[in-house]
Image (cartoon, rainbow, N blue to C red; front, side, top):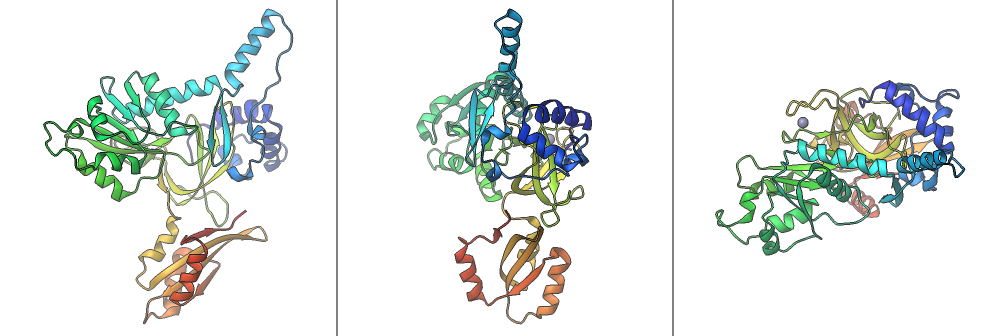
Length: 405
Ligand SMILES: [Zn+2]
């Protein structure tokens, strides 16, 4: 369970979200007999939505009543409301425009500065970023954060030429994971006395999932003592990227700016602490667009303990950007040659169907009993390898087919 205090959550939901968005008020009050949730527990009862469900971006905007009149007081009040609520800057996440007010942008700058500081960036560093400029969170969190933090930063289009990067003498390099590999792993200069890469202390892979293989390839390039590769990322819809500190232990969240909850994908109820499930996200203190109970489609577990590396009070997210980790039991079992899982809703209940092809010589009832101890699937369908291949091909080789509405 995310850590924002019940009081902060209750106040934000009541005074901001319910007060200034009729569509959100209807959702919030439907869950608890007409009143706005006062605790995280009550919030967990609010029906979750996905970004696909947001047909009208206006429905998630906060729109307070506008003071009318030309008097000095009315003008001043309007100005203050505009600063706080009027969306002046948009990013687009999974096709949905999310608005930020001036106050939101200032906040993202402060959050970005805390992120850079926690990553170990110093004010005498030189940041070279080639995150693509555009209506995306990673780019703006870095631009606004670097400005607020007060560090020199070059924001160039992806991917700079090796020689051009060398001229800037960066000590911090930020980009999308694959772009970073494209620049940093070039076999251009192997003399550490002249190679600009030997000055790089921090590489931040941002905006997209970073897998372990790519992380170690990037790490292998860095020759400075203590140089680190860190990851920053958030599920679409989330207003500030989660981040790794220099200790690199899981993704740190922003407890004063969000409520992160983990939901059991099968039952839809809140998962016990530490267990894996779907990440459901709620804005806290944001003013432009205010998403409540956003089902992110991303799976992970929440560690409520403070970070052992930097002491950040947490919680931290152990994100699984690929498939739900409860399905890893299928990978690990030597009796399973190939598999595909399907999540769907039947009569309001979530079902998990597992299609699998066993290895030769496997005793099927035993295999299914072992798997079922971990999976608790609704149904297992045993197929030969060929039939399973056909199924996989029908779904672009996805091993998890999510048919939930
Ligand atoms: Zn930490």
